[in-house]
Amino acid sequence: MSSGASMVTIALTALLMSSRQTFYSITFLKDFKSMGKRMPYMVLTMSDETYAVNCSLDIDDDKERKDTMFWVAMFSRIYWMAGSVIGGVLGQLIPFELEGIDFCMTALFVTIFIDQWEKTDRHTPALLGIAVGIICLVIFGQGSFMLPALLIASAILIMMQRKEQTE
Image (cartoon, rainbow, N blue to C red; front, top):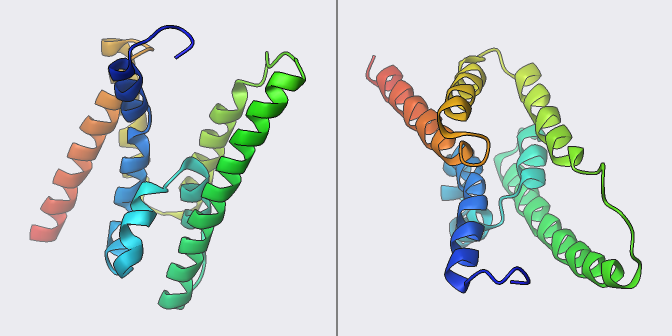
């Protein structure tokens, strides 16, 4: 808004930037469908952190696992909103440089990737994601490769899953 962008541009940018959460939700679609009234909330509150924590849950009891996933999503959202408000207020009151902190999201994604790699014996989805990501980076460039890479990788994985189910 401060840069003078239109509301349409802001809305479209926010939608595209948040699209990765939709892909995260696909991972838990089976769990979310069986959560009844909590399903829409679970899909809409999926964040990088919520995804990472929910992927690492090692709870055998189905009801307890789903309840834990819900509370993780709830508290993650509350912490995110509170942190955003506090950070916005403090950022206006205490001027400081944020240079050098941009590595945090990269570190988070690398940590999630390594955790998932270690937990599974099937590395095809991860390798496919890396390959498609690199190809899309070369084709679409650094500023716009993410959405095509997610769409292409998801489509390939869906086709692979359907093929496995028919065999």
